[in-house]
Amino acid sequence: MKLMIEKLTLSENTSFVARTYRTPNFEVPWHSHAEYELILFTEGYGKCYIGNYIGDFTIGDVFFIGSNLPHTFQKAEKDLVTSAVVVQFSEDFLGEHFLHIPEAKPVKKLFEIANQGLKIADGCNTELSLLISALENAKDFSRIIKLFECFELMANESHHKSLSTPYLDAVNFQQNKIDAIFKYTQQNFQQEIKLSEVAKIACMSISAFCMYFRKSTKKTYINFVNELRVGYACKLLIDTQKDIMGICYESGFNTLTNFHKQFLKVKLTTPSAYRKNFNEQLDQVTNAQQTDRSLAETDPIQKSKISLSKLSQTFYS
Image (tube, rainbow, N blue to C red; front, top):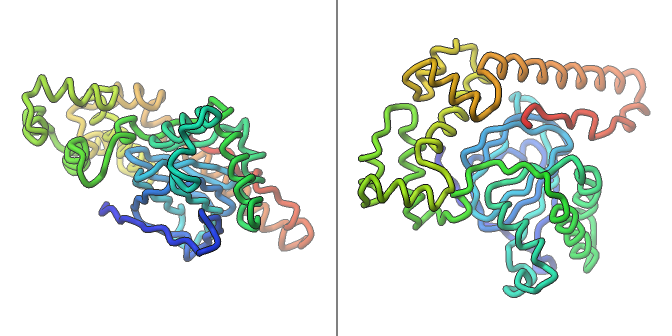
């Protein structure tokens, strides 16, 4: 996917953005921006791509995405209406020294791990969703207070799910040496990748490159490649009816045995079970939506009582 760089536009009366985007204005291609993004899904469901993570989103999910971390959210069906409340702010929107004061240490740590992309834990999801929804219509200093309450809730919860690999928190997508390695790997992971070729891109010997990559990402290059391949295999398992062997080779694995081994290591399940479980979850979502539509058609009052959290269960954990 070609990366689009997005520039945030602020009004003269605001220091950060908080607004709802709804189909057709919700759909944005693979992109990144310098601002942090807090996003609450209020309609629809589909797949999220954050860094090298491929996952799922549905109504009630909240994600916190760090600065310059590429991402896109794609709805599951062409005609599906999707919407989300999106909050975007720069790291220094309250001044360059804000995160360096002693009281802000938990928030600074939160921002650091957000550079991997976070799916917010269920423990604070409900209260956080109410705050994010209120931000859109909040005025004056009340906006700042509510945003700070969002920070506090997230910083005090330790069970958020980190999504992409850690190396992205050090990446400058225009300059960093790791970026060149990342781009090469993204373009070639479906075929055999030789360490000698990657080391050449980094202008290092093989041993020096392996040490450099592990130090930068906290994992080996081989593990990183396998995670990309498994992520792509997940996409094929969900989007196509291709057989497991075909997906194995298309994802860049040389043997079915190694494919199963690496898939189990990353996803803690087999490819077949992964596809089966996802389809079952998708059927539950579809059936729930059909039930809600039927209730709304027969009882308009009931439509207003349908909770946003009813469909908030997600397949990825």
